[in-house]
Length: 193
Image (cartoon, rainbow, N blue to C red; front, side):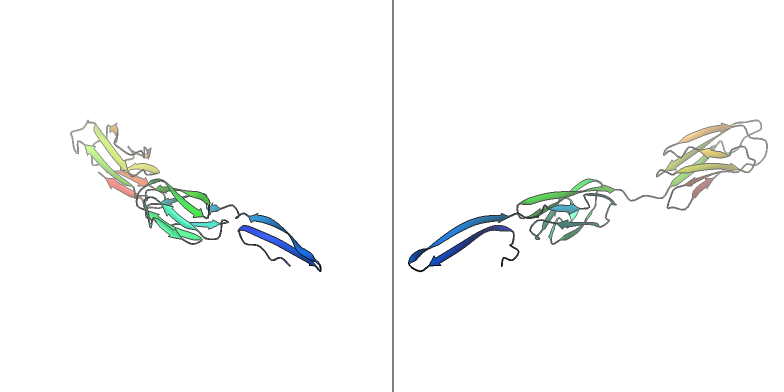
């Protein structure tokens, strides 16, 4: 019986004999190709200094890995784990026998907590007067909301990074103004004048 042949070229020969005659034979060469090499997952997204894990299948069953900018930059075996210290598009290459393929990795920055500052200018004045409130969000909050002790500055305000200003004509007396900004995964941040 014929077992399962290994990957590669194989020569099979049969020889028959008969009394009084020279032996006769015939041969056939058979090539067993390796299964298609794959790298999984084909693409993924991770953050800076976060583990990237990829696995290989197919091929000869023996795998070698290489990548640029990763730690480590190479390895062997059916799986490979690395990290990247910089953002951007990365490629992990895997080789098995005569086959090569790759996985793609997108590395993003670690999210930072939101920031916001609020400035009231001037800080005091003689009624009637105007004041300018300038709020400056940072690290891309999802939303910002204004509140005030006299309800003359309220509601949603721009969360876009950078300075934003509005001018008010407050009534006489003391006023407190607050801006609160929110970002998914972080506690709200606020500033008050």
